[in-house]
Image (cartoon, rainbow, N blue to C red; front, side):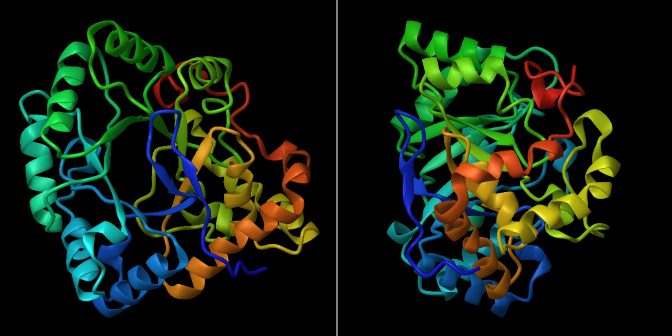
Length: 325
């Protein structure tokens, strides 16, 4: 199944920017490719309308890897001849060492490594324990005023903390968050589809970015990935691996690939504006974009077809950060 048009765009929440429905992530992506292949892929992505790139400097907390994926991305964009206004840059601000590692210093370093002077939006990362929300909102708002980025969201925050941030922003005139980037997939639905986030999405007008939609490649058929992959809230990864024959069966029912089914499913959530995925070549990018054709043809049927694949139901807490206490 192929998709031949330009990737459509959606608004990322009521107050967020208009973004492509498909975006490319950077974690364990550009630094695993030959440079020429990265240049070719980035150029092709922009031509297809996949012009949102989620790029981070992975150097803190569980991501203290000192990876060069962001540096490689910046070089590849320039080598591909892509002007800054032709793509949307989504950066990250980490909370692991905050406020000792200030947002101003983080964004300065991140943008310098990429080779640009601004992002378009940023994601403020997850955290453990208590957080000084007023300080976070004040620092983010200052960077918005300074033109470093125009909109921001959060990564896998508990719904109650994001709700408090929205309320505090409204009360004190800070720049409010406009979206949440959440782990969301065929198997992991409890947080994005739970009541706490449901209230936020409807009442605060937040948008969703779906991330880790392939469970590190498992839901796309790479059952034993060798690279580092994301966290496993609820300890259900082996169940996800064992469920792949069901994924394959559901995809074949629609004449699609498992990867296309995994991406298309996320778009059936009404708040999802963008699905982020990794791609290591043109063939994989084009295959993943076939999810848009699957969505057009069979969107209303998809949820029923994959109902039994919701594996974190009753396992994780929809209210908590990452779905776990």
